[in-house]
Length: 77
Image (cartoon, rainbow, N blue to C red; front, side, top):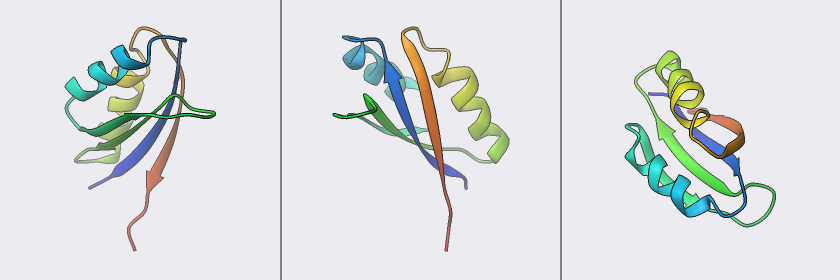
């Protein structure tokens, strides 16, 4: 089952709202505020790579006030 961490930059002051919205998306297991280069980190899981891609591109990146994302796919041993 594909999993990834999505590092998210948002407009200033939008962090709390975006974390709330992320937690409503099916497949988003965790979402946290972060200090540093990225504003939010989310752990996501999907049944396939195609569904993971769709979740990031169509559900997360399209949220209002999301500026950019960086997706880190987790590999299994």
